[in-house]
Image 1 (cartoon, rainbow, N blue to C red):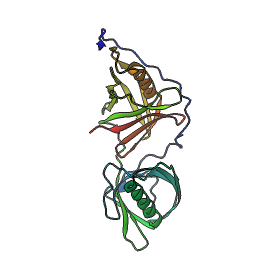
Image 2: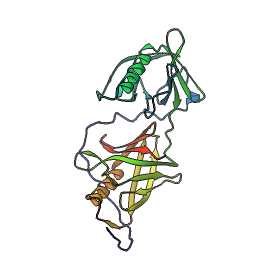
Image 3: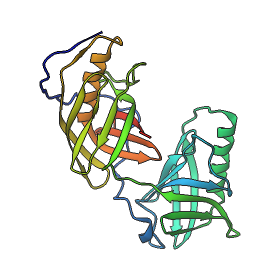
Length: 268
């Protein structure tokens, strides 16, 4: 049951976060359009797997590859990975990769192993028309990717988890839906589980972001239990965001100290 008050506006101050787990490495260089990538390097580019050994990725899995200066990271569809690579013109060799150890269903685990093997077999690459192709020693394609779209403007997202300001990233309460939309005029809006909210955002250097101040309507919701506390925590977490990263259909916002602020999935 909901009690409705007169709609007013209020501002959420940024919550001080002490969470340091999953720290984000130094911001990567601005992302490069695929058409400008060549023998000069791959640093600053991000990619989403299109095919692996001539087969599309399994349904509901997203495999990504992000290049920084001599470092690479991404998702193999199950776990996060990171490591190094060396580049000599269009020749490339990936070094030893390390990653998380989450277990997934067997088909996904096999796909992840195949992807890791494809990287190990890679000896050269081609990049043109928004696509990256990794080639083995014989010149055969072992994986192809499409360039990752990194522009927030015009995108909408559904919240998966957020930082509650108590050194924890928590899932959204069952029975609630939190949403965020970024328009092309620097405005952010959405629903925080009970109230609609709005405010401003600014993107700098591709991966840096400033959100807020935010304002929301002041409707009071009694169910589900904890929905109003969730709303306050979520809006405070948004205002701590300092960097963002889009990978496939996922968006991450992190605070300046690398702490996770919120995780999102692209709205369909």
